[in-house]
Length: 403
Image (cartoon, rainbow, N blue to C red; front, side):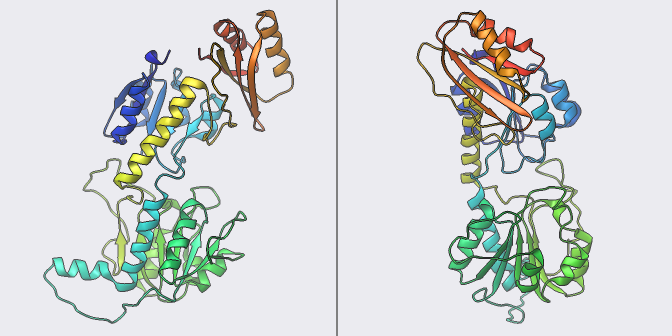
């Protein structure tokens, strides 16, 4: 069956993903660029899985039109570029790589903390312009200073541990209760982070709660001469307000790797931001996770998740599906069923299995409030017959015979 499945990879995903998927028998196409909504609608005809990075927007319209699509792979940490609600509605699991590039982002954060504290960006630019400015004014060690981490997930925790090795005192704030790493200390509010920290680094997802969470009022609460770093999502900081805080001298500097609007292509000469040309501001083109090690790890991780789902129905690691992974049983015949989580589904499925006079060798069901996902193995070659009858049920979103 896998010989017939087509996978489209976009945005120059690491070639290891293409190689790994091709070795599994899939027909894989790799493109260097992202695609627009209209282009996706056209290109996804006959495609069974798509792999994207951060620029491609998989909208509800795209998912509605992609009738052959079985899964979406986000070869990055975030999945806000995918309409998760629509994907779930259509029975499509979305996989990402929540761990693979955390070290790369954390290392960039630590390096930028040192660079901001020493005004390295300005000194480098001056040297390239032929200006020699040897000075100690405004340059400080980071040892003994306080770092505030907003969002204590995979990246935030690594930043906190690494920062302690530099002698920084680390505070963190998260809306969820998180286990402190090392000597990192939790605080009870964002305000405590802002008022106590010499450096504030943001590591939050793009949600309605985080939209413009750092604005005029929050910037005013930060210590005079402190620094703000945003390597999370471009919509969490009010850029014009940040530019004003920098120009007035209230903040001592800032680093940004993400922006509310970013060029559609990885190579572009039309980037514009209010943060350009301000003193002691480090601007990078969304490269927090762009290291060879991270991209290779991401390519391997997400391609593995897609392979396990397409070939065996495993949803471990999906951001929107119940996690199911049923071990392979020799000589069995497998079917997977995505259905609405309402009463009576298993009754109807068991009736279909009983009428097929098939013996269930193994089965695994997991549910979320709205969705149920069932994988069943039979001792006879009846998976196609049972799958067709499952698909006819009103409660079924998607049914698939795997082998």
